[in-house]
Length: 507
Image (cartoon, rainbow, N blue to C red; front, side, top):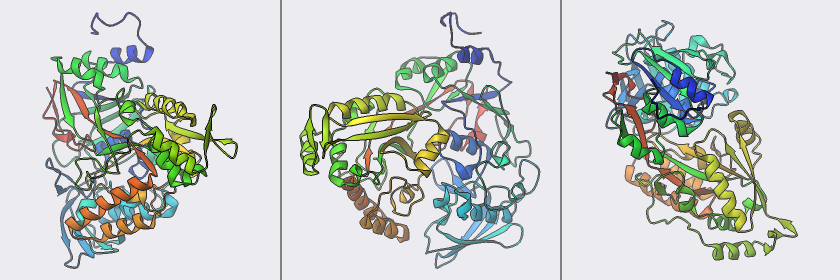
């Protein structure tokens, strides 16, 4: 029963969650917004990635030390020249509908991701593969565009069942999005009327799975997530708000699990915008933002100067974040032809007005955007703000590129491949950033088989991107998840959270 300390009047959603009984040993976890699609070809948010981790599997995955190990792949042999690999699939793997996994499924997935008609944001995960072919029912042969040192490190993308699609031109609106079939430890039962998503243990899974059921519950107001855990209406929180750490740490009903996400927040700039096409203007904006002041209400973390996290071997610690310097920003804007009057910065009589777009589902986005708008407008730059839903975000940002600034975050696996974000031909380079120097560094880093050379190249890239300022790098957050003490044997994957969920147990 809910504690008597709860307020007498509760929002309807909270009251409903508190009153909803849990099935025996069901793990209920909270997301700010429930995904409307479960198809790894179209994953764009971490909530979608976490759900996909429960349902689907890749050829390879991470062990507890984040070393690459086979998952759907039983073994693999890399050719001496690094240009091809033969993969033996694990025997006995079945899809949730009972059909066996075959090499054709792997080939289909790669070809679907590469098919331009699929429009998958995940295309960068396979664009280094020249071709894939089946050698019998359980062997896959891959040809690469260039020599690869450890291709298995990049073969963690999720495999899809060929028999559930009519061709390799997969569409986001296909029925599969709400009726997915995977090989993972959990199969989707249904999308519920309260925006929750129910999953059950796949009884045909080839190994033991500890928790019989998992439910994703949408709790859009994060102020209530910790309360729901304390009052036993949730068993897991993906990320704990800093202000809730103390109360959860002192609770006998919850355990905290620190983990380091490989993700960073940023303010992206559309370089097709007339003002933002000029590097001096971008550098000026970078020096008008007080990043630590933006971070303070959100939590704790590290302020960044480039496109990697400080724990990365590619992070260039010699490059300092821009830092707030209104005097230098004024000099740069004046050099670009702007003059400031009582109304703000103007050029040729036109005010400097920038449209900032942010996704509604991004945690703490509203707080950050309001503070950012206040900072910039206090320095004479007018900001028009638009918070949009996922569908509008995809259209305005990915398709129409109808914005000047955006607030978002990127999340990476341990490969930390920023090519799609920063290369002039990158599938996620919707800011239209183009730099011959950056393209060359990314190409050389991709082709290098020497880890030390790759490290040096990407640290140099860090410096170049910082100086070009196509992005205002913000921070990487310190993160904690929280679990009910009833959940045992928990190890949280730092990037995908549920990678090792099959080992979790409920008391």
